[in-house]
Image 1 (spheres, rainbow, N blue to C red):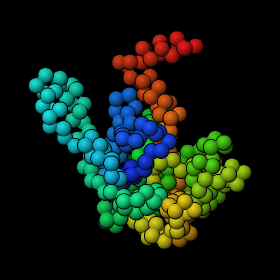
Image 2 (image 1 turned 60 degrees about the horizontal axis):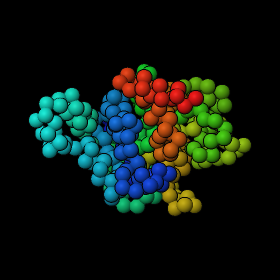
Image 3 (image 1 turned 120 degrees about the vertical axis):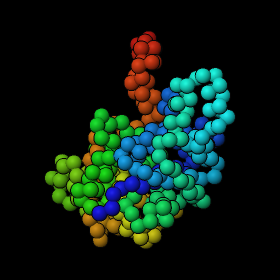
Length: 291
C-alpha cells in the first residue's frame, strides 16, 4: 500500500461570498489575524506527513504563489533592521512543504479541480484539503485522522462531521452501509447525496473539506456528468466510485471553520484571537465592553 505523501488544495474559485474583498485578493489569502487562511491549511498538510503539495489556482491568484515563495527584498530589509523574529515568521511560509501549482482554466466544480491533479498524483493516493476550510484539532490533525482511516481501510476516505439539520442542504451528505455504523469513527458508505433537503437526507453527516482518494477517483471524475450548473461535483464522482469500490467516511474530531463566508471568518477571527496570549486580554476586554 502506498503511503499518502501527496495532497492537492483546490483554490481556483472566485470567492463570491466574500466580495468585494475577494475582487483583488484571493479568498484563501484573507487572514485570520495576521496569517492567511491558506497557510493554516498548508501547515495541516505538512503536519499530516504530506511531502508534496499541488495548489490549483486560477489567473489573478498569483498572490498565493508569491506568499509561499521567498521575498528577497522584504527579508533583506528585516535582516538589516535586525527584526529577526519577524524575519523568521515571514520565512515560515517558504519552508512548510514543497509546493507546485496548476491553473484551472475554467471553474467547473470541485470534481474538475481535483481532476487537475491526475498527472501530479502519478497513480498514488492523494489527499485533498479545501482551500477555505480550517480545522483546529487538539491532537492529530483532521487530515491526519483521515490518513489513518485510509491506512486501515485501504479505500477512499471522506472526512465528515455531524451538522445541524437546518444546514444539511448546504453539504454533501453520506449514507452509511448500516445505519448503526454512523456512530463509529470510520465506517463504509453506500451513497453520497449532494445538498439534499433535510427531510430527504440519509444522515446528518456532512463531507467537510478533507479527503484521501485512491487513484481510481480520476477515472470516476472523467465519467461523472456535469450537474445543472455545468459543474463536476466530487460528491457525484464518489457516488459513482462507491458503486464499484469501497468508500469510507472518517468522522474526524476538531473545530471546523468555513472561511468562505462572513460568519465563518468572524468566528475564526474571534476564536484565534482568544488563543493568542499577546492579544487575548485586549480582545476579551473589548468583547465584555459590548455587553
